[in-house]
Length: 306
Image 1 (cartoon, rainbow, N blue to C red):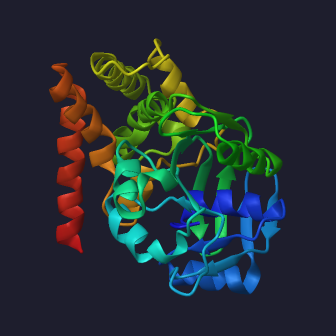
Image 2 (cartoon, rainbow, N blue to C red; image 1 turned 45 degrees about the horizontal axis):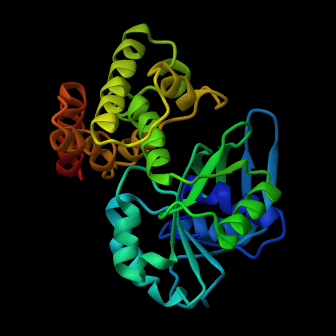
């Protein structure tokens, strides 16, 4: 699991619980030490589960696995995959479950596109403290697919492994469209959460935020159609509801989690992807343009404070 922050830890732990040998790789030394010493604790509103799983701060001494799941931040993709290039043997599959649009191309440029499968996940995760992750998997699906849309044995094996681990999965014959479907969810709450500082419990009931968040998604849907991407979402309220449905009220969007840590966000591959797509398709995107500029300004303030 390359990039085992909150979400990577949740997915890795689920796979480990079902019998797979999983190694969580993250630069967060405190998290690695806690997992090695006490195991990884998954918590939700009802119970806590402790999972025994390997963890490391780098991929340097690891041997090639059957599957590398990439969940590093989008802006770290090229460097992280290059540092782990030795893990990709002739039959190793590299699955990206990262946010935004375009990471699959960055990975393919390093390891070869023939190794890459793309996917998007609606599983939720939040790092509460080193070794402890809040999670939400019930009713939250993961979609994976070959870049060329074919249904392969390796795709089905990964799907079977996810299902056996309690991670609901769909196999897609048009993963590009699915990546945009997930992008709709990302832009529904991403910048709005980062700029307001609100967790989902408050964000989801704020009428003014809901109205503009739905309009943000509507822009993204228009861009996808303008690019001739075969998305199926027609109602922009659906991604808004899907973004927070089934998650604890205190759960925070990944962009807000980045802001609270004082780190760079993935706004460029979320709202930035909508803006860039709009320019290519000739579709105006004033809301996403504004959110992109606002979050970039916020990032600059955080940088100055550091």
